[in-house]
Length: 325
Image 1 (cartoon, one colour):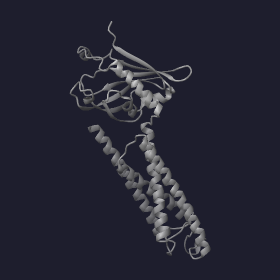
Image 2: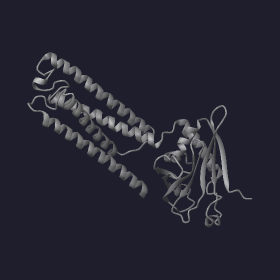
Image 3: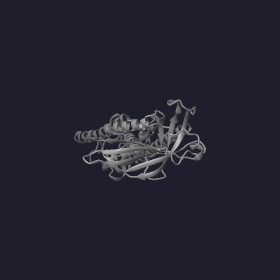
Image 4: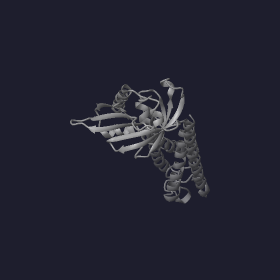
């Protein structure tokens, strides 16, 4: 009887959960591809049977069929956390082929995981079975993929979600920190409309009219700048981590997050310092600072709304471009 299934095995020195995380991630499939056909992927890591994601292919890597660039949808058919995952491919060919790719993971005594990669074409549509072109990948290609999988896990694969989260948090932190720098440099130092503890008029505990009060405000302004510096430092670090882990985003997304973070700084700082604690106001050198405080909040809301809109538009543009590629 002719076999209609290929299986290859390799023991990988890693926990099953680490390996399974790569196999659940769309970018993981791109990372371990041994054929060179998988160019990119769009979608979230899968968590259950029926989940899907899109893979952007280029058949020119094999140069066997004149398909060029095209998209396929990976449809999860088996999902047992940290034990087995399998999927079928939905493409533009009709009827759908129905072949299945999958991995089984078994812990090994003493450490490591025995990984079985399989390819099954026993249930393909009869139209395709008659063409006698299967298997469409070789045993050697399956074995090579296992080697690349072992390398990816050893190097520390960063999931799509992790890279995106690092980038997003980095943008918010940079926006918060840079917004604080603008406030401190422009309003505290250049214009000298207020310092951290000046308040205004008779309400001022540390008015900007005595040397002792200016010394106290200078100290607190310095602590304020130190906190914004820490925010920027953390943001730069996370942005660097996202980049070194292979995350890709456009400058529009980053600018959108920076603006949103700046707006968030204005809103939080304005509500807490200007209105709840009344440590200071935008202008402590005027009789009625309320309208300046409200304007500061309005600017913050506008910056946040505009930044989030820019970020959302850029992500929609990227997803549309992926679908049309």
